Image (cartoon, rainbow, N blue to C red; front, side, top):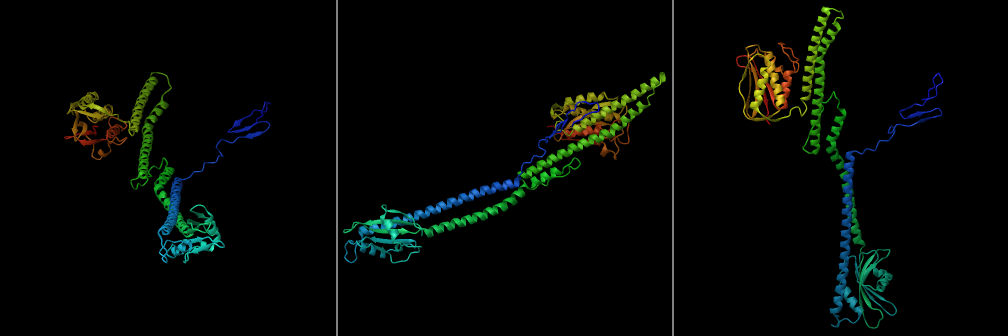
Amino acid sequence: MTTNDRRGRTPRTTTTAGTTTGTTGTTTEEAPGRNARRPLRIGARFRILLWLVFLMAVSLVTVVVIVRSVLWGDMNERVHQILGQETAEFGNFVEHGRDVRTGEPFSDPRTLLNDYLERQFPEPAEELLGFVPGEERDTLIRQPREISARLPLHEDPASVERIIAEEGRSGTLRRPQGDVRWAKVDIDHAGSDRPAAFLVTYHPASAEDSVRNVVGTLVLVSGIALLMTCVVGWWVAGGILAPVRLVRNTAARLTEQDLARRIPVRGSDDVSALAETFNAMLDRLERAFATQRRFVDDAGHELRTPITIVRGHLELMSQDEGPEAEAERRETVRLVSDELDRMSRIVEDLLTLATSEQPDFTRPEPVELAELTADVFVKARALGERSWELAEVAEGEAVLDPQRVTQAMVQLAQNAVRHTGPGDVVRVGSRWREGRVELYVADTGHGVADDEAPFVFDRFWRGADRRGGGAGLGLSLVRAIAEGHRGRAVLSPTPGGGATFTLTLESS
């Protein structure tokens, strides 16, 4: 926009969000894509149906064309055979036939044609004719039978003349009443410039109508089949894509607060596998969000107290001078430092628990169990003045994360020190059991009450005995490390009194 301040400054031009305004006019440029049309989205169901109908239509058209070509070819071949057979039979009669009245070969083409035509029984669409030229008028001899043709040639002398005038021995006569396929055999005789002829004609109209009827029926059946394909294809595609739509709708309804929806899995096809994969993804998301919420809740719950303590001591810190004020400030600094150290430990433990859900939380490698157990024992002895014993040592190699296992065992040893006193026995050991590795820390302290035992591995659980302080995250870390090795952490009473914590881990 254009702005003139009260001191007469030069107008300035401001450009914001695609709109430019100057002193002489205003030009507005719309943001790209704001009013742009969204591309037309065609659903998968419609695309599947479209391709199915297209392929079906192409297949049916191909079948119709092939069937029509085969039927048409068969009809033409049959007509060709009929014409060839009739002309061959007449040629054989001319060569070997005898006049029954004289017993001699035929000398008159009229007699020859009459005798031959009287003995023939042609098909309904077939017409046999004899042509004898004359000086005054040509004679057309026909078979004394009716044929099922729309206009027989013996009623159309002009068409006969056209056939006689043809030089070839066969052909097709085009006429408005319908085409006629013909073949002729010339008969030479004395006393005429033109030969007599035997004509074999075939009216293919009825055969063509039969072909057309078959093709028409096939087209009708194909159309019905295509329509049924549309209906069935739409229904089947809908059934196949129903899980996909369910995945889409479920994903659209998912929120951070509602990750409990799952897709029912039916069948064992690829779409069912997609639903299973989507459900597995939802499980991972739910665990991730739950871990995130738990981390935030735990951090807020546990860090609120030390932050309040630090703030209170800082607010009460005296501003006076003198030895007493200096001593008070030193004590406050000490308390604040302790609380900050505790906050640092809590944050570190919470971060470790938050990463326990990740696939790379543990990094297994081949480890000698005897060496690992000895290292844990040496580190545990430095935690307090107790009667430490290395109870038993497993031999062999196991695939474990040595750092995580050591962290868990040291945490168990520290927990034993916290709940025992000088002179109490703390045993550290490892063993093989049913193909798994067991590492344990057993003490002879006061043990864990029966009503508290189910909760000792929960976060921030410290029970009725709160000696030694701590945020109650140590045993939760132990359980997370055990589960990271596809194992578990177990609490059991020590014979004679005390508590035994055992890590049962997969060794590979």
